[in-house]
Image (cartoon, rainbow, N blue to C red; front, side, top):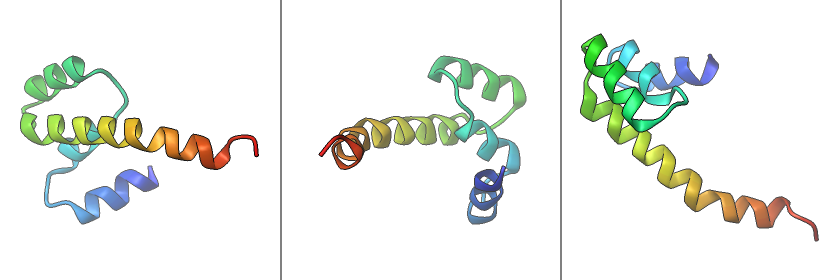
Length: 69
């Protein structure tokens, strides 16, 4: 919840858009929920894709950093 509050304070988007942007789940499911809830679909999709790309790029680096020495 702390991350959500910080993201909401730093973002000009409504709270529901920010919440949907960072909830775990598949891309298709979040798009459907955003459409039904009347949220900004582009905002939700952009944040989901950004999060996915960052995790894919950062996982090997963090794995090497935390892995066995």
